[in-house]
Length: 256
Ligand SMILES: O=C(O)[C@H](O)[C@@H](O)[C@H](O)[C@H](O)COP(=O)(O)O
Image (cartoon, rainbow, N blue to C red; front, top):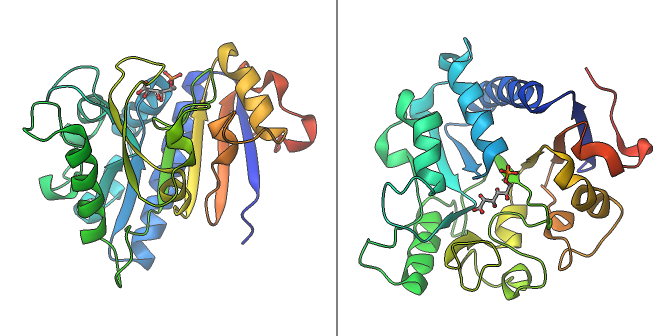
C-alpha cells in the first residue's frame, strides 16, 4: 500500500459527510476483523461533526462493535466540561452519546474546570495515550485520524507560524495565543497525528479553497499546517466542490 495523498471531491457538504460516514463504518468493521481494538482520533469543526452525525443516522451504524472502539481527539478548547464549544461535547451530542461505546474508551482532553493547569493537562493526555500504547511506544496505533482544516490551513490546534506546529519531541501540547478563540487549547503534535495509519481530512466551503490548493501544491507545513498531514498508509482529502476550486486537476481522483 502506498502512502499517497488523494483528493475525493463531492458535490456538497451533505454528500461529503454521508460518503465519509459510509467509508468510516466499512473501514472500522474491517479494522476490527484484523485487530482487537480500533483507535479513532476525532476533530472539531462543522464538517467533522457533520460526519459524526451522518454516522449516527446511518442504518449501518451498529454493524460496528463499538465496545472495541476507542475515541481520542486531535485537539480541544480549554473550556469547562460540557461547554457547547468543546469538541468532545459536540461529538457526544452528534454520535458518542447514541452508541454502545464504554465510557472508558472515550478519551477527551481535560477541561478547564478539571483542577489541572494547561501544562499538566497536556502531560496527562500524553500519559493516557502512552497507557494505551503497545511495547513501550508513546501512542496507541491510531487507525483513522479525522482532521478539519481552517481557512488559514490549521489542523487540530496547530496554527500557521505558531510554535506548536514545530514541536516534535512530545505527543501533546498546551497551546496559548491561538489566533482563533479561545486562546488556550490542547492539541496533538504533528508527529503524533502523522503516526496514524490513515488521515482523513474533511473540508467544505469556498473559504477553504486557498488553503487546500496551497497544501497540495507543496507549501511548507509551518505556513500551511494541513500540508504536513501525512498518514502512514494513506492520506485522503474529502472535500466539496467549492473547497476543491484550487486543487490541481491531476490530483483529483475520479468521483463516485
Ligand atoms: O477548535 C476549532 O477552532 C475548530 O475545531 C477548528 O479547528 C476546525 O476544525 C476548523 O476550523 C474547521 O472547521 P469547519 O469544519 O467548521 O470548517
